[in-house]
Length: 228
Image (cartoon, rainbow, N blue to C red; front, side, top):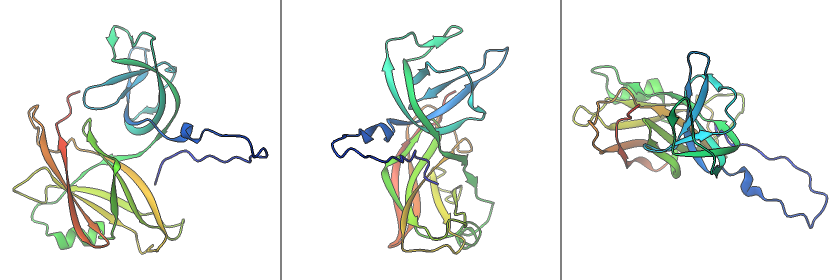
């Protein structure tokens, strides 16, 4: 589930100093395709306000699907834009790698949390702040949990609408499908938040709930409805 490039190399020269920072991403972005009238291209939404124009823009890397992705890039002084569209910066892509991107799940009406646990799981996770971010209408979550068999797929979801008093409280759920292990590993997933009430241009507090090995925890993030 962790979508990071893996370096495999054999170094015969012990004096060779390899720059492993190349394989560490500079950012998480939204890869946004633009299609129509024979001018298919894409751009990166870096945060709520910044648009990046990739110079290597000859095809749609993920088709017409919008996804979140890790990206390694270098800023340039080249013109940023096409067909009259103006972007904030032009960048040269070193590499990019997509992140599992899915929609948040609205809770059914009158469902209790015990039923949510049965349906979506309550297996524990820890959440890291480094790549966990709310921006551009997505909640991207970097988590850590126990991994056992590589043949069993873990399932993660973000549940909305459980708290009638706070529509911006969301619940991260993890179902290991019995694949419980003491061997820890990381995962990352992005959830589209387009089902939440519009914040009207204001920034509000979003509360994330999750089940950790030491019990339920919460964390707060700033959230503003995406403006396309």
